Image (cartoon, rainbow, N blue to C red):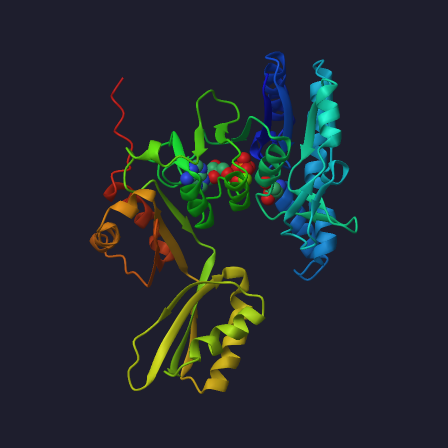
Length: 412
Ligand code: ADP
Ligand code: ASP
Ligand code: MG
């Protein structure tokens, strides 16, 4: 008998019919004798709807504590519906909010981190033969304030519960049948991966693949939780996220391509090329609590240089204001910005042992006459910033260049 944590995402519980289907599925697992803890998201679109409502009464700037009180309600609806649907089918079940379980988090509203999970209640329920249905995405801080874990946070609730309960597996059920070489909605020739290492999945998630929230992958890696991504309503092996690099040795150099449209670029031109300038530029940005992603400083000429960096698009206006201030102080020539950019990244542990991966990437982009604006590399990834309108073309070209395209289907 196994203990399994199953997480169902927004589209998988998006209608009453789907919730009934999920209940049927959970019932089958119960009939196999497994102990089941289910984590559910809000019905698809619900979290967005709630955020929109909050913005309407707050000039787009909802108070984070109240926003959390509000957006945590989406999951409260689905846990109750699923528990009802299970009970109706003769499966004893009980639902809990994050607060009721006591999923303790820090107090950073809208992006809280899980600190501790009290597993006593869940264990008692499992022992009594009940399926336990837990609200994803939410917790409670020391003071009893409701917190949420950031968009996509139900994945992290699932993995954290699996770690706390030492579950045999954490299954993330969603609307695709596994992790693909890239988003299958953008590249129809993308292929499902049987396995991907935690390290690669972590890069893919941090570089924009929203199939798993990055914190859930961090958690799974840290506590060695066996993690699998599967389709909610289709049979199949899904994708196993594994520690084992050896077993993926046969895989191609590149495991996947990630991309995001969430960044914006800022450039300060004609700054004096003297020690300390990078700090003078980025110090105030970080003091304003704005995270910087990619950074490029040009080679100096005339004793001045240009300095470019990217931030999240939501932080663009704030970063621009800070940078204009810095420009005045440093006597820089000008500040320019661009929000029409996208970042495309190739990811693979195979890069460690292969030279020429970056140049192969640049060649493929050159063939499509796509201009590269910024480049950054690490041991297992290469990222480039390009003009946003070329994003899909770039991803498809790279997918082909690195031999990731699915073989053409045989005519039937
Ligand atoms: P859920 O609501 O179940 O949490 P998400 O929308 O958060 O689902 O995540 C699933 C989506 O992630 C898929 O529909 C797919 O479009 C997208 N996605 C992005 N990159 C990938 C990838 N490499 N493999 C699979 N899906 C991906
Ligand atoms: N409902 C939350 C969101 O839409 C959490 C999740 O679905 O994982 O981000
Ligand atoms: Mg998700």
